[in-house]
Image (tube, rainbow, N blue to C red):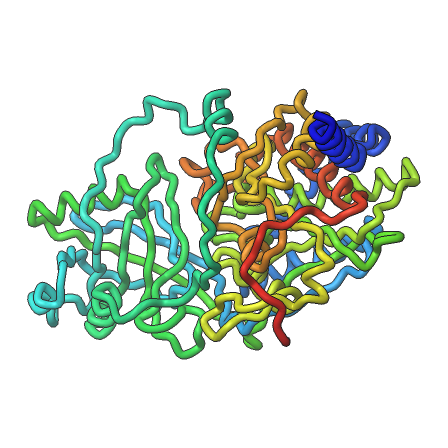
Length: 523
């Protein structure tokens, strides 16, 4: 009984010590809420990022302009060590300066559409008939030999459009949040390079066949979107990457599903359809390198250790990159601005150095953040897979916080299977229950830059966000504009994240880490 009592006391003492270390500082949080909710600048930041400097395709001149503006702004606010860190080579960039597409026969109508990124210019205004290429294997292609030259090639069949009886925007309800909170820890998956190509698949053979036939362009209608919303990303090269200087790329465009379906139905009736298209585009970024934006708030007694927050700054090109990811970049910039004001007001300085990173190349496979992790924290093999850690720098980072799921406010944190941080984050969320941030889930979320850190054995976290209309309307679409940002949600997100970053910087210990099989290795 005596031994049991001693054990219980030890457990209670450990719990008390943990709570004491992670009890939120009310002075800090009061100042953060004041500057985040009452004196917010997040929408002004977002307007500069999106209205003035959008879109921000990796390798494009507009991304360079946005990068210059971000560095200047961060310096004016008082951030230290503001600089660019190169990664790459990425390859050539791209911008388009004009695009127009019309149906001219059997009758005229304008077409809503956008070129796919890295599509080359057409030879002025080009005009030709539509042909539907239906092929499931190489044998099917033989029927189209000699029939594609000077044509617009349609590869997709009709997509049924259903009327939207449910609202495209939504918020997480109590049951959805409870289900997330009750989800078990996921199995760990190894890092992989998202930008590697597989073998010579049929699709690659298909595109080589099409290119050899010299059509005017390849047209698709995307797998989702209606009512004029067009989801469009990058073109496909015949071989290799479209960013490679020697890659052969034919003009490609995505058009509104309603226009695609109309043309398709006419062709299926045996009625010839003639289209015209005019695309002016340039390949850019002659040195092939790209850059991440880095800025810091210096620490004090633990200044050699760092806490990182970040978001990807690049976007696709049909909209202005507002929800993906001008929102995340604006929130993270706003979070450090809030912290600078909090430090001025309270006199409380962070113990660890706080480092902001705005990544590029995310849309092509987390290239900027992966490049940064490989430069600072880990060693990678030829295929991009992390092989070992760089013990010195990797051991000095406490954690990385990421935002990249649209305009929705923060409802909690994906713990990426790191159960040990749960009581810490629970204490930090408690002061923000009134703002709707209260859920922790052991589950992973993928497709964004925290994965680069998680793969290197570093605590990396993406926040749970309200979905709003991210997947249904704005993500990679022509409607990804600042009009679809929710101001109050962005204010809340910047406030919660600023508090998390500051309290991570103030802890006696770094954040606990998951068990990893990675070992220290030479650079």
